[in-house]
Structure formats: C-alpha cells, structure tokens
Amino acid sequence: GQQLNQSPQSMFIQEGEDVSMNCTSSSIFNTWLWYKQEPGEGPVLLIALYKAGELTSNGRLTAQFGITRKDSFLNISASIPSDVGIYFCAGQLPGNQFYFGTGTSLTVIP
Amino acid sequence: KAGVTQTPRYLIKTRGQQVTLSCSPISGHRSVSWYQQTPGQGLQFLFEYFSETQRNKGNFPGRFSGRQFSNSRSEMNVSTLELGDSALYLCASSSGAVNEQFFGPGTRLTVL
Image (cartoon, rainbow over all chains, first blue to last red):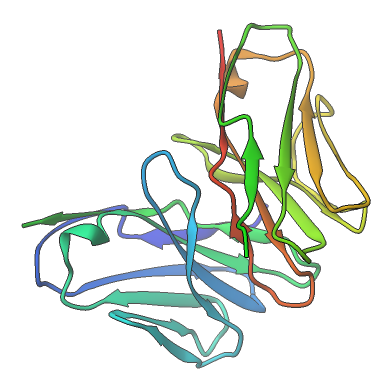
C-alpha cells in the first residue's frame, strides 16, 4: 500500500512554542487532510487541502499542500496544553481511498 | 448536525467468536469507510462503501467483511476472531462529493 512518512514521531515542547510537523509520500495525492486524535476518541478533522500550493489556516493551525503534491506540513503557533494529542496526516488518491501517516505525538509542557 | 456514531463503544470477545460493529454516518453522507487502528500499525484502511456498494478494499483477510444499508448505515463483521484483531475500529463518513472524512469515536475491541 501507499506509505506516508510523517515526522517527527513525537515532540515535547514548552507552552507557547511553535510546532511544525510534515508528511511526505512517493505518490501524488489529490487531497491532504490533517487530524488530531485524543485518547479514547476518533480523529477530528482540523484542516483540508485540495490544491497544490494551498495554504490554509484554522485558528493557530496552518497547513500547506506541497507544490509537488507529495507532501504537506502542519504548523501550530503558540502551543497551549490542550494541543496535546496525536496528529495524523492523510492523503487521498484518485478513487477516494485515504492513506494515513503514522502520527506525531505532541506533548505540551506548561 | 449529529456526528458519526458507532456502537458499541467497547467489546470483549474470545478467540474464534465473531463480532458485528455498527456505524451511522452523518446525515446526508453516503460514503462510509472503516479503519483498524493499533499502536504498532497505525490506521489501516479496511474498506469503503458508497451507496450500498463496496467501492474500495484494503489488504485484510476475508474474515473482515462489511455492508451498507439503504439509509447509509454500515456494519462491519469479523469472523473467527484472533488475538491480533484487538484494536480500535473507526468508521468515517463523507458526502462522497467533498473529499473530507469525519470519524466516529470508534469501537474498542478486545479479543481474549
């Protein structure tokens, strides 16, 4: 199956710091999605990207669809304790199937 | 608008048994996808149903099956359970026209 390489695997940061994570693939995707998952819950959609080069913000979150359509990044500015969770990227190929990254575990130290 | 609902939330079974999980998508959504999530393998795609037809299938054995009803509700069945089937099973719905998937809270299956 398709492989999405997500990095870093985990991050420990101080409250107030900015965070950056990314996903890369050998395949070209039509859509990139970013999710956050908290313990015991399903992933929650944060940002959806549809066009190469697209830059989209959702509050303190900003994500970009890479020009090559093979990568995407997510930035979180001025992190707060409730940002704690696991962040997943997902890419969609033609035909609707989504492939997920392995996740970035974020810990915010107050 | 109500979100994606999954029942039951927790399930304990023993090896060899079978299990059926249920998913009700967001109203108006016609696509339902199922995923298995484990700490070691992450989110693995099982299958997707759209308008009662299986549209995509992941790389899982035939013990894993699903179906979708005319009201878009979907069920997933796992037969002859194995210890390795213990996982969080997530379902996600989308309208089919817009490429965004919304997840339910999942069913935590434990196989003893």
